[in-house]
Length: 469
Ligand SMILES: Cc1ncc(COP(=O)(O)O)c(C=O)c1O
Image 1: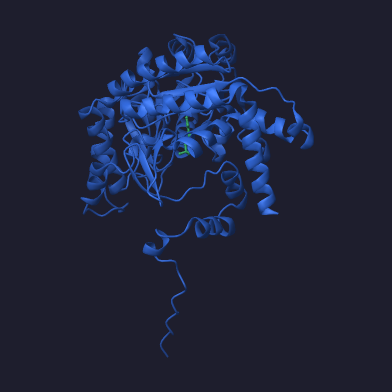
Image 2 (image 1 turned 30 degrees about the vertical axis):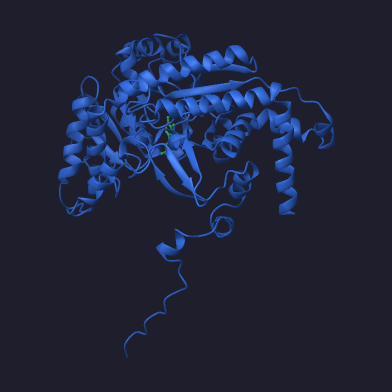
């Protein structure tokens, strides 16, 4: 007897999924993904129904245009839906996955990456996410060195898989999953003397560091830090892993931020914009010396692998991304536009003292706010909840104002919610930069000292809590 064909479940088709209402979409996330995340996003009215995106612009289902200054946390250096990246991906007719053969596009991408990477960086491993690149880099470093200790920085962010999380300098994310990788030491970021001390016993496999801390709050280290770090690692036989997952591909005004100081890491971690904002793509690239000692034997050649790593379409996106970055001189664009934006933001800082700090390099910019006073009737009525919200989510509140009143998308940094980040596509226009500047000026002028904004945002939050109950 033949097997009875299963009836087709009541799937949501692709066409239908692209036309879901905001309420239906919210309900799916509520029931099937992460109900608490839905609540958080609803709190600051962040759950719009976006239906189209191009470059720096996004449109909602009512035809309103928004500007994206979040830029996929650094994953959209080329902007949304870059037509040439989509065309490159669609042009691929090769097998997308065929582990039994050497993928020509992966090989070409690795060659191109070696051409543009600093120093002697040569051998690439391809994966699909930043955390995966970091995992691979840590394993490579430990195998190479025959030592297990890793040194990382407080406030750092390297991803949330177990290995990457083990070297991420934020308690909040690490604590619930301990024990993590043993023997990881955290030192203050930007402190080369602390690094020297941590490496003195020569028992460290590697030091992993971001050239500018992204999630830590867009922290730019002191001038010359990375150069000193390079020398200290070399002197104490520790590998230097530079995590450029967020800073890479032109974001800070150079193809890679370590080039700002002429530093060559032993292992460089990449992801985010590598896939042109269309395909998931990540890599670590290492020197021949490191790679060969770790994996350069028949026995060790398959010690670290990834099923989708370097698949044809992702590799095609990577090849096209590198070409576009060089052809359109995106690194220079980031440097020039960043200088303009930083200059204008510093003028705003002069006008509004609660804009405590403006910092960054290229189009990786952070705005830090002074804490508002935690007093007032609403704070008392809510048992201090408003004050707590203000201290924990001030950045989110500014981001909420920018979105709801000015249709500009930004977000606070993960490890420092008092900082909002500006990481627009590197193709952003000067007119769009000016729109952001005008919006910030208006928000700051209207919310002198932020008291009013905290109160109005808190009311939205309280109202949405009431709605939920
Ligand atoms: C510097 C850095 N490293 C690693 C990661 C992790 O990347 P992913 O989220 O793709 O795992 C991030 C993500 O924000 C990052 O900014």
